[in-house]
Image 1 (cartoon, rainbow, N blue to C red):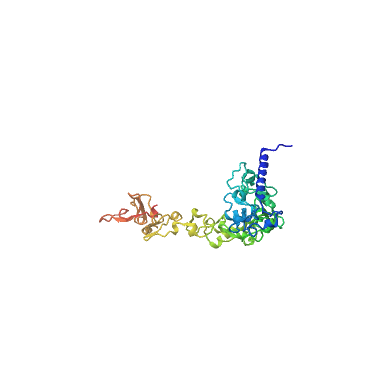
Image 2 (cartoon, one colour):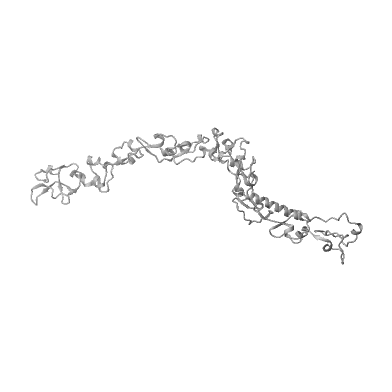
Length: 448
């Protein structure tokens, strides 16, 4: 036979003591009239007719008691624990026991049971006092195992909130988990294995636990998507939620600048400008002899061609008479001389008192300034004259003199032309061709 441990011996000893106490407390009961008493004896006492009040019982010798002042509870009866509890109460650390109510006793120790109290010191780890509601005064009576020692299984999980509670059963210590929830009893729902150990408060089929323990197939979410989102038919059997099942449709996409919504794709699934929108001419890159347009109608066009999206460029323009190609604007939109070309001196408007030079090379050149394109109107008188190669008008005949002019350089590097003049020498009858008396005209084309 196995040896009994010390704690077992203590336990047995304590039990024997408690039984003795209980037996002692239950020993005293209502006294009974001895069956051997004679009628004479029964009629000799003063308490025979007395009825004890509540909480009192007749004394064992009530039939022999004689009194000088008549019968009373004090004279004829004995106090019981019921009276003690009613009058005094058990006091702190004790609880009344109904089993003792008719015992002929009148004290806390005889009429009440000691309780364990909340501060009872339990020495074994994981045990705590059963508290003031538990009767006892030993470790075995007052200490109980807490739920921290109990291992929950079979779909139940230990609850941190109950860990310090006294208990040793699933009902006392455990919480239900998703492992106990039946997801498949409703079509379209499957078990969420990742949530198997999640604690829930309700396992009813229609409870909020379904959203925690189960995952829905996308077919259940159809019709719950936000505006502009739908569940594709191909995803009906896929597991997911609103975020993963509801796919954006093109009708919900905001097209980027330069794109227009493609109305024909509004109900199709897509989430980008490239998928759902059409390019407009605002994004078109013109090529060849075409240039970008500023025309709003053309920019909004979806006909992605040079002809629809662009304007003819200056590169394709042929400049008219009196105009020169402007290489700085060849890539710009334009098809007229004013936009695509530069004026030559031939088209230059000279200021008052001036005229366009008659030099063909000048007139075919870019009109850079009035000085380049224009000359004084006085230069016109040299148009039909012949320039001399020398700067001397002498030795010319009278007929030749009037048809000639000389070109002279001045001190300020400008060029002057002077017509030869038939000149009388003093009061003589001698004439000669000279230039000194002629009026010079500066910067005429003839002098260039």
